[in-house]
Image (tube, helix red, strand yellow):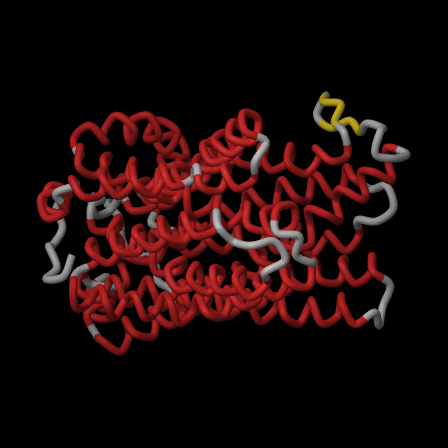
Length: 449
């Protein structure tokens, strides 16, 4: 009775349909990344906490912590990342053991979408409700992303992996950028009160996330696992034990571990540059919020072409060389940013354009490479470690920026200090023997890596 499923998986039309459904989840959850995390929630939740505290000099209490309003959102981000680091490997192992990846993806996605929709109810001094909803939404966002990424090796062969990963990433930039543009039109038009416009924008991200998740839910398919692993009771108990085994098992794949280290370091640079750019534009360059918003929107849409363009380059010169070349561009971008003139909006837009070209490709091709150096049947487990590397990088980047600002009191020195992440990441990735890493993991070595 199981043979028809195997046959279906070998039909090219069925696989293409599944790939197209997979792209739509990136379109769906990117709304949370752009509208909620990048633009609206941080400032809004800070203002709600300020109201509850009776002013900027007051304090709010959360999980036994007394926090200044301006520190409330960053504290929530830190707590949510710690929760993600604990939950993601367990959920990943559970998905691999049960084979019910589609259902697990759906549960976490819809819990996250519902929590995001609930931001509409956060107003006045309701910082506690906002904090709880954010923890739920951001944790489930990260966990669902682990399961989503783990489908990539199952729906694509080694030779098409770069193209499939890049299309998903590009599609996500397009979807997230489109909803953000619509929300910014509402927010900047003045047609509705500012607080209401923000709440509507935040809730729209939840609605968008939930609605478009229906498409991958209809098209993605589970794969079979050994019968002894498929029971929920065994999987639930085994997935917790598997977390320790996965970490210990990495010693069998030293080249995979080295790739993870390289990715953690250079992705740290990528994420920190993206996160610090608005502060740099505001505090050092003196650019208005309008210019910052314009740059964010431009990056979202240009990154679509950047992700697809770098995938084409990878098909010609190899994926590893393309990622290494993108790191050279990142190094140049950070170096040039040091010399930008105050008030020079055109120069800032030029830098943002260069970032957009390499941003999506760097991340999409890295995901594709990683999918080749992990053992088959344990994709979600290993992608949880990949996402942990992604989340953990926020700490290192923030630390370097903090030290640079503390020691030099210079935003320009702080931004140029990030070059170290791209240089070290470049060196580590250079020494990774990818063909050997792929063979050690038990996978096929593609022609272009």
